Length: 191
Image 1 (cartoon, rainbow, N blue to C red):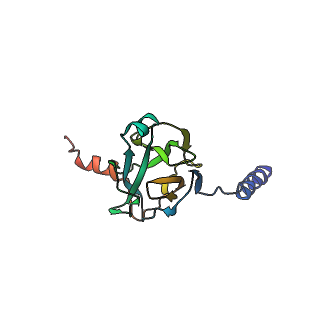
Image 2: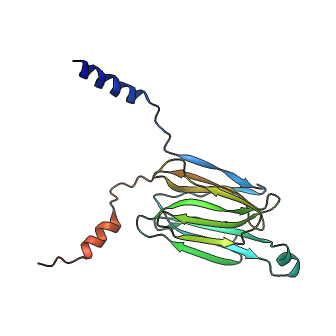
Image 3: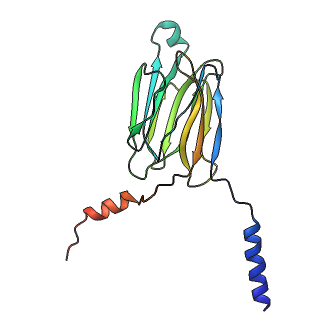
């Protein structure tokens, strides 16, 4: 009888615990001038494109004036509009099945643009663009199992002036662990 009372009290206390919000936001860094943007799409992010501008004349080279001029995300098979501009060298990464972006880091000039951007996946792959100078930032989800859902911030006529990251769970109806199942389907049993 006492055991039933203890178990009941324990279960009731578990129900009374607050449930964590499954979403989190990494506050934007950067100067923040220009037009606002927020990426959007259905499902998981499956690809990333980032354009970097490296000014090669003496003044800009001496002062390390490189910056992120634009970026684009792909959700499923659909690319978002380009946020910023398609100027400079393009870096691109397509994500594998069950791969997700779990960290966004880089450097920014507080009076200017995002100088350097690194996107890291749960499989340890990275995409980096720009030059690593100025003030560092590092964004990651507050909850285990979350992944990058969207990027927001501002851009002006030259490039991205601020960036923030939104994290959450991806609910995919009918989605299965396609990487493992595909691998198992391709293995022929030997009898």
